Image 1 (cartoon, rainbow, N blue to C red):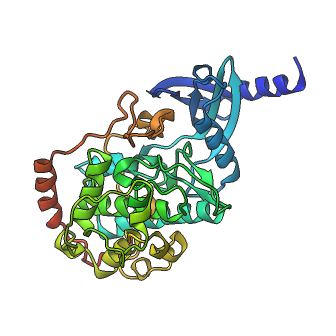
Image 2: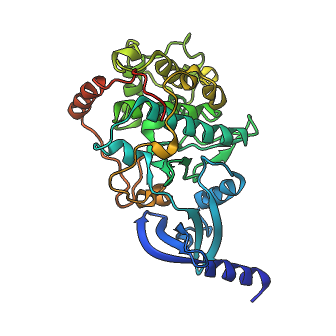
Image 3: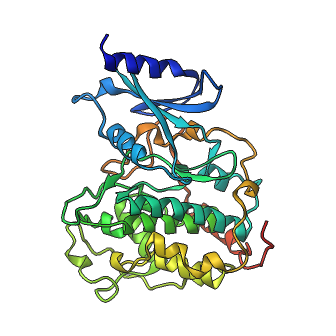
Length: 368
């Protein structure tokens, strides 16, 4: 046994797998612990043997970027070891995710709670972008929640660096409901603005308690976006008709956000609108968002330790960070067991939105 094999064997002995909590096409996730301290961890076992070239590219990306990113609002990679034909990622253990919290109807969100989750999301994302890393798959179940309430960006399987602005990138990233229109139109050169669009969709979902723009196909996704925000013109978004996959999908008038988010504060609507600007170069950046008046106005963000928690604290890794699934060409929502998000029918969607309109997001709530 050489030095590398000995070091790997020693790392493997540090961790014990206790229980399988999730499985996808390319990975199995276990709840585990560190033998010396008893600390709970999540162990993500990548099924290396399934790939012709030996290792899934998403696993390489995840290891590479999580080794580089150390921030309170980014999931921590604790260790990596191999066993037989598998690669194992040891990640910090997190109690739930934002999707589970949004769906838990026993929980009531205050405006200060939504502001706190948004602040932590933008902090984590600003750090990624400052480190020249695009996430490219932000959605509620990739925002994990720790026991102390801290929100952490997770699942970096589709992440990539973007230091070279002239380098072509794939447009087949980001789960469809959170994918910006430039990617649906086939843009191969893009920026950190794609992640900001996703955060805007998450912001809207936190206020509505249902997905904001849930399309059933790429064409339907565009129609859903244009129905919500109006069909863009060349003045709104210069050059979009020249994108590789551009095709007209009908003319829809611009509907004021206030018509749907009737109880949101003016600052909240202003920030949301800046996240969902069609022209990527005009979209607000994560850094600019952190200095937006929304975050300094009352109510102040709830302290993370006092944020609502799931009544049934399943682990975030039960849903997993898609357990190794990537969105792929169809922009799907995950294909592993228990990993699909339930699509809402138009009738259910309308009913839920009518309920959402009655929620009051404007009351000044004392800071907790």
